[in-house]
Amino acid sequence: AHIDTIIRAAIHDLKNPLSVIIGCADMLISDRENLSNETTARITDEILGSGQKLNGMLDEITTFIEQ
Image (cartoon, rainbow, N blue to C red; front, side, top):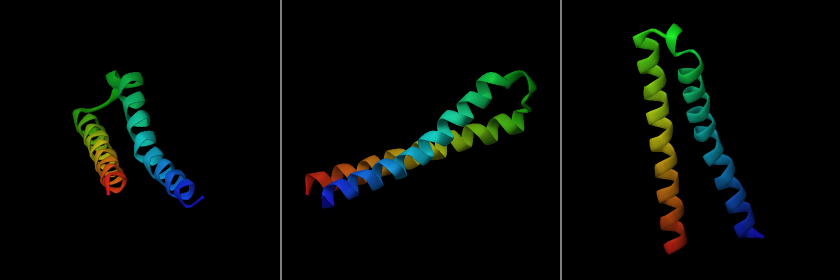
């Protein structure tokens, strides 16, 4: 049961940055003609940061599993 709790917590933590990535990408796609370059850059930075966060979490999970 302990591993189930860890897996559920990891899934929960991974969903937040993934939701940000999906939401930002949707915004870029659906409203691209109305977004300023500054807003587009900010959204792109948010996508990149969330992707890097996800990548780091997956690296931590991989390290944990390999121990």
